[in-house]
Image (cartoon, rainbow, N blue to C red):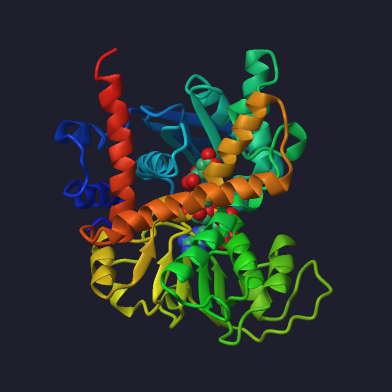
Length: 429
Ligand SMILES: NC(=O)C1=CN([C@@H]2O[C@H](COP(=O)(O)OP(=O)(O)OC[C@H]3O[C@@H](n4cnc5c(N)ncnc54)[C@H](OP(=O)(O)O)[C@@H]3O)[C@@H](O)[C@H]2O)C=CC1
Ligand SMILES: O=C(O)CCC(=O)C(=O)O
Protein backbone atom coordinates (compact mmCIF):
# COMPACT_ATOMS: atom_id res chain seq x y z
CA UNK A 1 0.00 0.00 0.00
CA UNK A 2 0.77 3.66 -0.32
CA UNK A 3 4.27 3.47 -1.85
CA UNK A 4 3.56 6.19 -4.34
CA UNK A 5 0.87 8.02 -2.36
CA UNK A 6 2.42 9.69 0.67
CA UNK A 7 -0.98 10.90 1.89
CA UNK A 8 -2.33 7.32 2.05
CA UNK A 9 0.83 6.37 3.90
CA UNK A 10 0.31 9.15 6.42
CA UNK A 11 -3.32 8.06 6.98
CA UNK A 12 -2.17 4.47 7.49
CA UNK A 13 0.39 5.66 10.07
CA UNK A 14 -2.43 7.49 11.88
CA UNK A 15 -4.69 4.44 11.80
CA UNK A 16 -1.89 2.37 13.29
CA UNK A 17 -1.64 4.86 16.18
CA UNK A 18 -5.38 5.30 16.84
CA UNK A 19 -5.64 2.09 18.90
CA UNK A 20 -3.08 3.43 21.39
CA UNK A 21 -3.92 7.16 21.47
CA UNK A 22 -6.38 8.62 23.96
CA UNK A 23 -8.21 10.61 21.28
CA UNK A 24 -11.94 10.94 20.62
CA UNK A 25 -12.76 9.15 17.34
CA UNK A 26 -14.55 12.21 15.90
CA UNK A 27 -11.56 14.48 16.54
CA UNK A 28 -9.30 11.77 15.12
CA UNK A 29 -11.38 11.65 11.90
CA UNK A 30 -11.18 15.47 11.66
CA UNK A 31 -7.38 15.22 11.70
CA UNK A 32 -7.42 13.17 8.49
CA UNK A 33 -8.36 16.24 6.42
CA UNK A 34 -6.31 19.38 5.79
CA UNK A 35 -8.01 22.68 6.69
CA UNK A 36 -7.37 24.00 3.19
CA UNK A 37 -5.08 23.76 0.15
CA UNK A 38 -4.53 26.64 -2.24
CA UNK A 39 -3.47 25.78 -5.79
CA UNK A 40 -1.83 28.59 -7.76
CA UNK A 41 -0.95 28.99 -11.43
CA UNK A 42 2.36 30.74 -11.93
CA UNK A 43 3.17 32.15 -15.38
CA UNK A 44 6.83 33.17 -15.43
CA UNK A 45 8.84 34.81 -18.21
CA UNK A 46 12.15 32.95 -18.11
CA UNK A 47 15.54 34.49 -18.86
CA UNK A 48 15.37 32.70 -22.23
CA UNK A 49 12.37 34.87 -23.15
CA UNK A 50 9.95 31.91 -23.03
CA UNK A 51 6.89 32.03 -20.82
CA UNK A 52 6.48 28.89 -18.73
CA UNK A 53 3.42 28.14 -16.60
CA UNK A 54 4.16 26.42 -13.26
CA UNK A 55 1.78 25.03 -10.68
CA UNK A 56 2.21 25.55 -6.94
CA UNK A 57 0.42 24.69 -3.70
CA UNK A 58 0.21 25.76 -0.07
CA UNK A 59 -1.57 23.34 2.23
CA UNK A 60 -2.58 24.45 5.73
CA UNK A 61 -3.29 21.24 7.60
CA UNK A 62 -4.21 22.12 11.18
CA UNK A 63 -3.88 25.23 13.35
CA UNK A 64 -5.32 24.16 16.70
CA UNK A 65 -1.94 24.65 18.45
CA UNK A 66 -0.84 27.87 16.71
CA UNK A 67 0.11 29.44 13.37
CA UNK A 68 0.68 27.09 10.43
CA UNK A 69 4.36 26.27 9.90
CA UNK A 70 6.24 24.35 7.22
CA UNK A 71 8.70 24.45 4.35
CA UNK A 72 8.40 25.04 0.61
CA UNK A 73 9.65 22.39 -1.81
CA UNK A 74 10.71 22.86 -5.45
CA UNK A 75 10.80 19.48 -7.22
CA UNK A 76 9.48 17.92 -10.45
CA UNK A 77 7.59 15.22 -8.52
CA UNK A 78 5.60 17.62 -6.28
CA UNK A 79 1.86 16.82 -6.24
CA UNK A 80 -1.06 18.18 -4.23
CA UNK A 81 -1.31 14.89 -2.31
CA UNK A 82 2.38 15.00 -1.47
CA UNK A 83 2.15 18.58 -0.20
CA UNK A 84 -0.89 17.61 1.91
CA UNK A 85 0.93 14.63 3.40
CA UNK A 86 3.96 16.80 4.18
CA UNK A 87 1.65 19.36 5.84
CA UNK A 88 0.14 16.61 8.00
CA UNK A 89 3.60 15.40 9.02
CA UNK A 90 4.51 19.03 9.91
CA UNK A 91 1.45 19.16 12.20
CA UNK A 92 2.42 15.99 14.09
CA UNK A 93 6.09 17.09 14.20
CA UNK A 94 5.39 20.51 15.73
CA UNK A 95 3.13 18.88 18.34
CA UNK A 96 5.66 16.15 19.17
CA UNK A 97 8.44 18.67 19.85
CA UNK A 98 5.90 20.89 21.60
CA UNK A 99 6.18 24.02 19.46
CA UNK A 100 3.22 26.46 19.49
CA UNK A 101 2.51 25.81 15.81
CA UNK A 102 0.19 23.92 13.52
CA UNK A 103 1.44 22.38 10.27
CA UNK A 104 1.61 23.47 6.64
CA UNK A 105 3.67 22.81 3.53
CA UNK A 106 4.18 24.39 0.12
CA UNK A 107 5.44 23.08 -3.16
CA UNK A 108 6.04 24.10 -6.76
CA UNK A 109 6.28 21.58 -9.60
CA UNK A 110 9.55 22.51 -11.31
CA UNK A 111 13.05 21.22 -12.05
CA UNK A 112 15.32 23.82 -10.40
CA UNK A 113 18.34 22.38 -12.23
CA UNK A 114 16.81 23.68 -15.50
CA UNK A 115 16.23 27.21 -14.15
CA UNK A 116 18.68 30.09 -13.85
CA UNK A 117 19.05 32.10 -10.61
CA UNK A 118 17.00 34.82 -12.29
CA UNK A 119 14.25 32.33 -13.24
CA UNK A 120 14.16 31.02 -9.66
CA UNK A 121 13.78 34.55 -8.30
CA UNK A 122 10.87 35.30 -10.66
CA UNK A 123 9.21 31.97 -9.88
CA UNK A 124 9.60 32.52 -6.12
CA UNK A 125 8.17 36.02 -6.29
CA UNK A 126 5.20 34.76 -8.38
CA UNK A 127 4.58 31.92 -5.95
CA UNK A 128 4.75 34.28 -2.93
CA UNK A 129 2.33 36.65 -4.61
CA UNK A 130 0.03 33.66 -5.27
CA UNK A 131 -0.03 32.43 -1.66
CA UNK A 132 0.25 35.92 -0.07
CA UNK A 133 -3.33 35.88 1.17
CA UNK A 134 -2.66 32.74 3.21
CA UNK A 135 0.75 33.42 4.73
CA UNK A 136 1.68 35.97 7.40
CA UNK A 137 3.85 36.30 10.51
CA UNK A 138 1.02 35.22 12.83
CA UNK A 139 -0.91 32.97 10.41
CA UNK A 140 1.39 30.79 8.30
CA UNK A 141 5.19 30.94 8.26
CA UNK A 142 7.04 29.20 5.36
CA UNK A 143 10.66 27.94 5.54
CA UNK A 144 13.11 26.03 3.31
CA UNK A 145 12.67 22.38 2.23
CA UNK A 146 14.07 20.49 -0.79
CA UNK A 147 15.73 22.78 -3.35
CA UNK A 148 14.89 25.97 -1.47
CA UNK A 149 17.34 27.87 0.73
CA UNK A 150 18.01 31.17 2.56
CA UNK A 151 18.02 33.08 -0.76
CA UNK A 152 14.56 31.69 -1.60
CA UNK A 153 13.34 32.83 1.84
CA UNK A 154 14.84 36.30 1.26
CA UNK A 155 12.86 36.66 -2.00
CA UNK A 156 9.68 35.48 -0.27
CA UNK A 157 10.18 37.88 2.64
CA UNK A 158 10.88 40.77 0.28
CA UNK A 159 7.86 40.09 -1.94
CA UNK A 160 5.52 39.81 1.06
CA UNK A 161 7.01 42.99 2.59
CA UNK A 162 6.58 44.99 -0.63
CA UNK A 163 2.83 44.25 -0.54
CA UNK A 164 2.58 45.10 3.18
CA UNK A 165 4.52 48.33 2.77
CA UNK A 166 7.08 47.59 5.49
CA UNK A 167 9.65 44.88 6.28
CA UNK A 168 8.14 41.75 7.83
CA UNK A 169 11.07 39.42 8.72
CA UNK A 170 8.80 37.10 10.77
CA UNK A 171 6.79 35.96 7.71
CA UNK A 172 9.40 33.29 6.85
CA UNK A 173 12.20 31.49 8.68
CA UNK A 174 15.47 30.14 7.32
CA UNK A 175 16.42 33.66 6.12
CA UNK A 176 19.99 34.88 5.58
CA UNK A 177 21.54 36.23 8.82
CA UNK A 178 21.68 39.76 7.41
CA UNK A 179 17.87 40.05 7.21
CA UNK A 180 16.80 38.40 10.43
CA UNK A 181 17.93 34.79 10.04
CA UNK A 182 19.29 32.90 13.01
CA UNK A 183 22.72 31.34 13.36
CA UNK A 184 22.39 27.56 13.13
CA UNK A 185 19.28 27.19 10.91
CA UNK A 186 21.13 25.94 7.80
CA UNK A 187 22.69 23.01 9.69
CA UNK A 188 19.79 22.56 12.17
CA UNK A 189 17.96 19.62 10.58
CA UNK A 190 21.19 17.65 10.08
CA UNK A 191 22.33 18.58 13.61
CA UNK A 192 19.03 17.26 14.99
CA UNK A 193 19.49 14.03 13.01
CA UNK A 194 22.98 13.64 14.47
CA UNK A 195 21.72 14.33 18.03
CA UNK A 196 18.93 11.72 17.82
CA UNK A 197 21.32 9.18 16.28
CA UNK A 198 23.67 9.64 19.24
CA UNK A 199 20.71 9.35 21.66
CA UNK A 200 19.54 6.17 19.91
CA UNK A 201 22.97 4.60 20.29
CA UNK A 202 22.97 5.47 24.00
CA UNK A 203 19.49 3.94 24.36
CA UNK A 204 20.53 0.77 22.55
CA UNK A 205 23.76 0.71 24.61
CA UNK A 206 25.85 0.66 21.43
CA UNK A 207 29.00 2.62 20.72
CA UNK A 208 28.76 5.27 17.99
CA UNK A 209 32.55 5.31 17.66
CA UNK A 210 33.36 3.64 14.30
CA UNK A 211 29.68 2.64 13.80
CA UNK A 212 28.90 2.42 10.09
CA UNK A 213 26.42 4.88 8.56
CA UNK A 214 24.85 5.16 5.08
CA UNK A 215 23.18 8.46 4.19
CA UNK A 216 20.86 8.64 1.17
CA UNK A 217 20.97 12.24 -0.11
CA UNK A 218 23.84 14.66 0.44
CA UNK A 219 21.82 17.90 0.28
CA UNK A 220 21.17 20.29 3.14
CA UNK A 221 20.01 17.67 5.63
CA UNK A 222 22.10 14.66 4.58
CA UNK A 223 25.38 16.57 4.24
CA UNK A 224 25.16 18.22 7.69
CA UNK A 225 24.09 14.96 9.33
CA UNK A 226 27.00 13.14 7.64
CA UNK A 227 29.54 15.82 8.64
CA UNK A 228 28.40 15.89 12.28
CA UNK A 229 28.29 12.10 12.61
CA UNK A 230 31.75 11.91 11.01
CA UNK A 231 32.94 14.47 13.60
CA UNK A 232 31.34 12.37 16.35
CA UNK A 233 33.47 9.37 15.33
CA UNK A 234 31.02 7.37 13.21
CA UNK A 235 32.21 5.88 9.89
CA UNK A 236 30.10 7.26 6.99
CA UNK A 237 30.51 4.53 4.38
CA UNK A 238 28.06 5.73 1.72
CA UNK A 239 26.16 8.77 0.55
CA UNK A 240 24.34 9.76 -2.64
CA UNK A 241 22.70 12.32 -4.90
CA UNK A 242 20.48 11.64 -7.92
CA UNK A 243 23.51 10.46 -9.94
CA UNK A 244 24.05 7.54 -7.51
CA UNK A 245 26.03 6.72 -4.38
CA UNK A 246 29.69 6.77 -3.35
CA UNK A 247 30.56 3.72 -1.22
CA UNK A 248 33.75 2.92 0.68
CA UNK A 249 33.52 0.31 3.47
CA UNK A 250 36.58 1.92 5.14
CA UNK A 251 34.70 5.23 5.36
CA UNK A 252 34.29 8.24 3.07
CA UNK A 253 36.43 11.37 3.36
CA UNK A 254 33.37 13.43 4.34
CA UNK A 255 35.08 16.87 4.61
CA UNK A 256 36.55 16.54 1.09
CA UNK A 257 33.29 15.21 -0.35
CA UNK A 258 31.49 18.08 1.39
CA UNK A 259 33.80 20.69 -0.15
CA UNK A 260 33.28 19.09 -3.59
CA UNK A 261 29.47 19.11 -3.31
CA UNK A 262 29.45 22.65 -1.84
CA UNK A 263 31.27 23.75 -5.01
CA UNK A 264 28.50 22.19 -7.17
CA UNK A 265 30.20 18.81 -7.73
CA UNK A 266 28.23 15.60 -8.29
CA UNK A 267 28.74 12.27 -6.53
CA UNK A 268 29.54 10.55 -9.84
CA UNK A 269 32.30 13.14 -10.46
CA UNK A 270 33.67 12.54 -6.96
CA UNK A 271 33.93 8.77 -7.43
CA UNK A 272 35.57 9.38 -10.82
CA UNK A 273 38.23 11.53 -9.09
CA UNK A 274 37.07 14.77 -10.75
CA UNK A 275 37.06 17.04 -7.67
CA UNK A 276 35.50 20.51 -7.70
CA UNK A 277 36.30 23.55 -5.52
CA UNK A 278 38.95 21.95 -3.31
CA UNK A 279 42.71 21.46 -3.26
CA UNK A 280 42.38 18.60 -0.78
CA UNK A 281 43.73 15.19 -1.64
CA UNK A 282 40.98 12.81 -0.72
CA UNK A 283 41.90 9.70 1.26
CA UNK A 284 38.95 7.47 0.32
CA UNK A 285 38.59 5.22 -2.73
CA UNK A 286 34.86 4.93 -3.22
CA UNK A 287 33.07 2.83 -5.78
CA UNK A 288 29.85 3.98 -7.43
CA UNK A 289 26.70 2.09 -6.42
CA UNK A 290 23.02 2.88 -7.00
CA UNK A 291 20.66 4.62 -4.56
CA UNK A 292 18.77 1.31 -4.25
CA UNK A 293 21.99 -0.54 -3.33
CA UNK A 294 22.83 2.11 -0.70
CA UNK A 295 19.55 1.35 1.09
CA UNK A 296 20.51 -2.33 1.34
CA UNK A 297 24.05 -1.94 2.72
CA UNK A 298 25.02 -3.89 5.83
CA UNK A 299 25.45 -0.88 8.13
CA UNK A 300 24.67 0.01 11.73
CA UNK A 301 22.49 2.98 10.75
CA UNK A 302 20.70 3.92 7.55
CA UNK A 303 19.75 7.59 7.20
CA UNK A 304 17.37 8.27 4.29
CA UNK A 305 17.72 12.03 3.66
CA UNK A 306 16.19 12.51 0.21
CA UNK A 307 12.61 11.75 -0.87
CA UNK A 308 9.65 9.82 0.56
CA UNK A 309 8.63 6.23 -0.13
CA UNK A 310 12.11 4.71 -0.61
CA UNK A 311 11.81 1.88 1.94
CA UNK A 312 8.83 -0.21 0.87
CA UNK A 313 7.36 -3.70 1.15
CA UNK A 314 9.41 -4.54 -1.93
CA UNK A 315 12.87 -3.85 -0.44
CA UNK A 316 12.28 -3.92 3.37
CA UNK A 317 13.40 -7.55 3.61
CA UNK A 318 16.73 -6.63 2.03
CA UNK A 319 17.42 -3.65 4.31
CA UNK A 320 20.25 -4.87 6.57
CA UNK A 321 20.75 -1.80 8.78
CA UNK A 322 20.19 -2.35 12.51
CA UNK A 323 18.53 1.05 12.84
CA UNK A 324 17.01 3.70 10.57
CA UNK A 325 16.98 7.41 11.39
CA UNK A 326 14.48 9.13 9.09
CA UNK A 327 16.02 12.45 8.08
CA UNK A 328 13.68 12.69 5.06
CA UNK A 329 9.95 13.11 5.48
CA UNK A 330 8.02 9.90 4.85
CA UNK A 331 10.83 7.62 3.58
CA UNK A 332 9.26 4.40 4.96
CA UNK A 333 5.86 2.99 3.99
CA UNK A 334 3.59 1.42 6.58
CA UNK A 335 3.98 -1.99 4.92
CA UNK A 336 7.77 -1.68 5.30
CA UNK A 337 7.33 -0.53 8.92
CA UNK A 338 5.56 -3.78 9.69
CA UNK A 339 8.33 -5.91 8.15
CA UNK A 340 11.08 -3.96 9.92
CA UNK A 341 9.28 -3.86 13.27
CA UNK A 342 8.99 -7.67 13.23
CA UNK A 343 12.76 -7.82 12.67
CA UNK A 344 13.36 -5.40 15.62
CA UNK A 345 14.94 -2.76 13.38
CA UNK A 346 14.55 0.46 15.39
CA UNK A 347 13.25 3.36 13.29
CA UNK A 348 13.48 6.88 14.64
CA UNK A 349 10.50 8.44 12.82
CA UNK A 350 10.77 11.52 10.62
CA UNK A 351 8.56 13.65 12.87
CA UNK A 352 11.21 13.29 15.58
CA UNK A 353 14.44 12.74 13.63
CA UNK A 354 14.16 15.76 11.34
CA UNK A 355 12.48 18.15 13.79
CA UNK A 356 15.72 20.11 14.34
CA UNK A 357 14.90 22.34 11.36
CA UNK A 358 11.53 23.52 12.59
CA UNK A 359 12.81 23.84 16.17
CA UNK A 360 15.46 26.32 15.02
CA UNK A 361 12.91 27.99 12.72
CA UNK A 362 10.83 28.57 15.85
CA UNK A 363 13.90 30.04 17.60
CA UNK A 364 14.37 32.37 14.60
CA UNK A 365 10.72 33.46 14.78
CA UNK A 366 11.03 34.12 18.52
CA UNK A 367 14.20 36.21 17.97
CA UNK A 368 12.36 38.17 15.25
CA UNK A 369 9.53 38.86 17.73
CA UNK A 370 12.06 40.01 20.32
CA UNK A 371 13.97 42.03 17.71
CA UNK A 372 17.04 40.49 19.28
CA UNK A 373 19.56 37.86 18.16
CA UNK A 374 21.10 34.98 20.03
CA UNK A 375 24.61 33.51 19.56
CA UNK A 376 25.02 30.14 17.82
CA UNK A 377 25.86 28.38 21.11
CA UNK A 378 22.52 29.45 22.63
CA UNK A 379 20.59 28.26 19.56
CA UNK A 380 22.39 24.91 19.41
CA UNK A 381 21.96 24.31 23.16
CA UNK A 382 18.21 25.05 22.92
CA UNK A 383 17.92 22.76 19.86
CA UNK A 384 19.63 19.95 21.77
CA UNK A 385 17.45 20.47 24.84
CA UNK A 386 14.20 20.46 22.86
CA UNK A 387 14.90 17.54 20.50
CA UNK A 388 16.49 15.56 23.36
CA UNK A 389 13.41 16.00 25.49
CA UNK A 390 11.10 14.87 22.63
CA UNK A 391 13.36 11.85 22.13
CA UNK A 392 13.14 10.97 25.85
CA UNK A 393 9.34 11.34 25.86
CA UNK A 394 9.03 9.08 22.80
CA UNK A 395 11.28 6.44 24.37
CA UNK A 396 9.36 6.65 27.64
CA UNK A 397 6.07 6.04 25.75
CA UNK A 398 7.63 3.14 23.82
CA UNK A 399 9.08 1.58 26.98
CA UNK A 400 5.58 1.36 28.46
CA UNK A 401 5.48 -1.71 26.23
CA UNK A 402 2.10 -1.48 24.47
CA UNK A 403 2.95 0.41 21.25
CA UNK A 404 4.71 -1.61 18.52
CA UNK A 405 7.37 0.91 17.53
CA UNK A 406 8.85 4.39 18.03
CA UNK A 407 6.71 5.89 15.24
CA UNK A 408 3.51 4.82 16.93
CA UNK A 409 4.85 6.13 20.25
CA UNK A 410 5.63 9.51 18.65
CA UNK A 411 2.24 9.67 16.86
CA UNK A 412 0.41 8.87 20.09
CA UNK A 413 2.06 11.80 21.91
CA UNK A 414 1.51 14.21 18.99
CA UNK A 415 -2.09 13.25 18.24
CA UNK A 416 -3.10 13.43 21.90
CA UNK A 417 -1.62 16.97 22.17
CA UNK A 418 -3.43 18.16 19.03
CA UNK A 419 -6.69 16.50 20.09
CA UNK A 420 -6.51 18.21 23.53
CA UNK A 421 -6.11 21.58 21.77
CA UNK A 422 -9.16 20.84 19.58
CA UNK A 423 -11.19 19.75 22.61
CA UNK A 424 -10.34 22.90 24.61
CA UNK A 425 -10.99 25.19 21.65
CA UNK A 426 -14.21 23.44 20.54
CA UNK A 427 -15.46 22.74 17.05
CA UNK A 428 -17.33 25.98 16.29
CA UNK A 429 -16.29 29.62 16.38
N1 LIG B 1 15.74 21.43 4.69
C1 LIG B 1 15.20 21.23 5.88
O1 LIG B 1 15.40 22.00 6.82
C2 LIG B 1 14.35 20.02 6.11
C3 LIG B 1 14.25 19.00 5.20
N2 LIG B 1 13.57 17.86 5.53
C4 LIG B 1 13.48 16.74 4.59
O2 LIG B 1 14.77 16.22 4.31
C5 LIG B 1 14.80 15.68 2.96
C6 LIG B 1 15.95 16.33 2.20
O3 LIG B 1 15.75 17.74 2.20
P1 LIG B 1 16.94 18.77 1.90
O4 LIG B 1 18.23 18.18 2.35
O5 LIG B 1 16.50 20.08 2.40
O6 LIG B 1 16.91 18.79 0.32
P2 LIG B 1 18.09 19.14 -0.70
O7 LIG B 1 17.40 19.55 -1.94
O8 LIG B 1 19.07 20.06 -0.09
O9 LIG B 1 18.83 17.73 -0.91
C7 LIG B 1 18.17 16.61 -1.35
C8 LIG B 1 19.17 15.51 -1.62
O10 LIG B 1 18.46 14.33 -2.07
C9 LIG B 1 18.92 13.98 -3.39
N3 LIG B 1 17.77 13.48 -4.15
C10 LIG B 1 16.75 14.17 -4.71
N4 LIG B 1 15.90 13.35 -5.32
C11 LIG B 1 16.38 12.10 -5.15
C12 LIG B 1 15.94 10.83 -5.55
N5 LIG B 1 14.82 10.66 -6.26
N6 LIG B 1 16.69 9.75 -5.18
C13 LIG B 1 17.82 9.90 -4.46
N7 LIG B 1 18.29 11.10 -4.05
C14 LIG B 1 17.58 12.18 -4.40
C15 LIG B 1 19.45 15.27 -3.97
O11 LIG B 1 20.33 15.00 -5.05
P3 LIG B 1 20.58 16.15 -6.16
O12 LIG B 1 21.28 17.25 -5.43
O13 LIG B 1 21.43 15.45 -7.17
O14 LIG B 1 19.23 16.55 -6.67
C16 LIG B 1 20.16 15.84 -2.73
O15 LIG B 1 21.38 15.18 -2.50
C17 LIG B 1 13.41 15.95 2.39
O16 LIG B 1 12.60 14.83 2.62
C18 LIG B 1 12.90 17.14 3.23
O17 LIG B 1 11.50 17.22 3.28
C19 LIG B 1 12.98 17.68 6.75
C20 LIG B 1 13.04 18.67 7.68
C21 LIG B 1 13.64 19.97 7.41
O1 LIG C 1 11.59 25.00 9.37
C1 LIG C 1 10.41 24.86 9.15
O2 LIG C 1 9.55 25.66 9.47
C2 LIG C 1 9.89 23.64 8.43
C3 LIG C 1 10.91 22.68 7.92
C4 LIG C 1 10.22 21.58 7.15
O3 LIG C 1 9.69 21.83 6.10
C5 LIG C 1 10.14 20.24 7.71
O4 LIG C 1 10.42 20.04 8.90
O5 LIG C 1 9.75 19.32 6.97
